[in-house]
Image 1 (cartoon, rainbow, N blue to C red):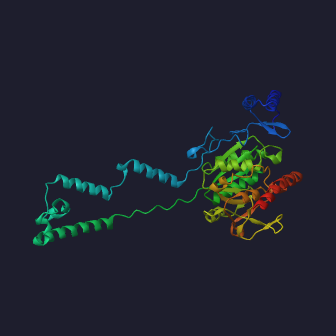
Image 2 (image 1 turned 120 degrees about the vertical axis):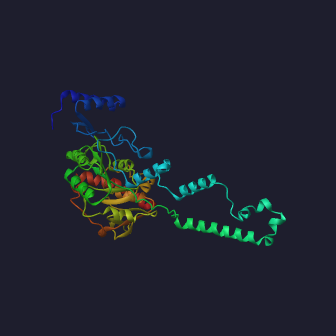
Amino acid sequence: MSEVPPHVTGLAEQRARARAGGDHAGADALRDKIEAEGWLVRDTADGFELVPRPPFEVWPTVSSVPETGAGGRRSGRAGPVGSEPAGRDSASMDAGRVAEAAAPEARPERLDDLNAERVAAAEAAPEQKPEGSELVGRADEHRGHPEWDDHEGHPERMVSSQLLWDGSLSVSRLDESITPAEHAEPAAPPTVTVGLLVDGWPDDLRECVRALVARTEARIIGLDLGDVDGAGAVLHELVQEFPRRVEAWHVAEAPHWRGGTAGWGESRTKLLKLDTSDVHVVMETSTILDGDAITPLVRTLTDDVAAAGWKGVNPGADGHHWHDAEPGEVRGLLGHLFAVRRDAALAAGGFPAGARYYRNADLEFSLTLPGTLVALDKDLPVHQERHRGYHDVDPDYRDRESRRTYDRVLRLLRDT
């Protein structure tokens, strides 16, 4: 890493004093000056650190990342180059139908148009009343007149009228037979986005994303926390490699487990709100697809099933310990891989804001979801590499934060 120039360090120290004094506007202005010098300042538990500014847009904190506005458009500043979400085919089809409705002249000729032409031609032609046509539709006009009331006295008119009536029914039935029945269009399949929290381990990220692109049709949103070990730079490379599939957001705020201030729950909720799809998939970068494991999860979701995942767990009889569950309905889904209806996740308030670390936060989220949870387990073509979020984190930190979250899980269990 390049040595930080003394004047940049001085700016960062001034910013720290401004933040401590509550001068947030002044702190923001100093942060912009630091960025103009080619550096980023990250707030840590012990103060701050300075790192070279990368070649992509970086937001200062998770909370500062602009969320989706009305109509599926981003509010605030635009995201990084290549961050535009990939379109859905049904959207272009809908746009075509709207354009067709707005410009009728562009539509193919239809029976209604032909009928209109025939009517216009009939109106332009000399009036020719077929024999007996004066009887059709004129009953009200002539009711009470002996000549019209006494049909038996005019059999030839009755025969002509009946022939004309039968002929009109024949034309009507012919129109019915050749006019295609309008059928409701099949519902478009749900849109799906995989949310990845990028907080280190760039090689895992690369393998995870490439497997997703190769084996699914899902969009991918990555939220980079602090470019830990260059993982944010790899995410940027993946956006360049797969611009129609991968969207990236970068923040300077480092993850809590690395001494930063970005918590797991807050970051996961931000990913959920950045998403505009029907189904939001929670996945860890240590989880690798061997086939399309996303579609079976999405198909399991219904109005009653709020979430479906790879691995499920149930609480034991003592209410304190959880154990692996067989495929089927479960109380908790593990965060390695699960799909959740986005409306259900938002109804639950997103992911637990108090969870600074991932462990047990998936259980806390599961217990707040409205609806049934289902685990598919061995039926999914997926495997997990080394679970670095557990094994490669400081054990003291891991145990402390796990206990904090698990206390909330126990309270939820008692309440339910």
